[in-house]
Image (cartoon, rainbow, N blue to C red; front, side):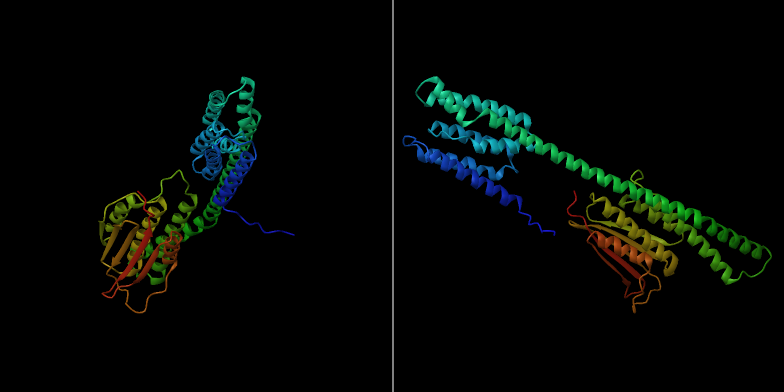
Length: 374
């Protein structure tokens, strides 16, 4: 039977460890012989060294220094207590990748503890050295180093395994996308090309003979051209990969310029202070303008269209207005193009409005959050 797991926040765990180590140090230190009137100072240093471990994830080197100084201080105050807090700090520093700093600090602390013991305590040198050794055992120090390094290596292997899984999944997705592109190309491209060529030949022959071209034949010709364009765009999207630079905000001026060649009077206005935006936002902005202009050219019977790109502090606003024949009421049912725009905008957490204008024509308005991108 599966049992649910309760995830304890890391901060709670760190404070629990810090409090436990501080209590252990205090109980060990106060259970020993009196420190000659320096119990208060020594107890404060013992508690400070333990509680400092609460910050070992955020500032491992600072905690290493604090616990080392507290060990020197309470040893000078007469407390013979193993520097458990420093050992935990060494483990945290090595786990965070600061092996050299932890090694140098530990060697320095061993020297300082011996010097402190010789200066602050009377008696034979052997006893003084033994007292210093009891504060920081080399064997415990090596164990702390080994534990920190073992956990660091395990975490690194786990990260590499996760990256490898992501790369494998991405590679499989790329392969599937290319397979679909090949299937579409093999199954549809040839047939659509035949329809397109045959209809164009039929229209050409009818016009050369001076005959009236049937509306159905013209519709087939236009549908063939449209299907060919759409299929080509779909195949390009499926074959697209990270090696090809994606379209973004920088490509919008050339996009607007291309639509001017179709006889559509197109203007582009850029407001606000241009700034870098996330790549996904730039791609979505380009697709919104492209789809909007395409819809105007195909369906709106418009003569003018205005594109506005407005850089705002926390989002990018896009607006495309035309003077076509859209009626204010009712709003048209969204097609696949509008649905695709809405899905792109929603995926970024933005907002999209598509509706007829009261003065005539149609408007597309989008707001894409930029999350304060520099």
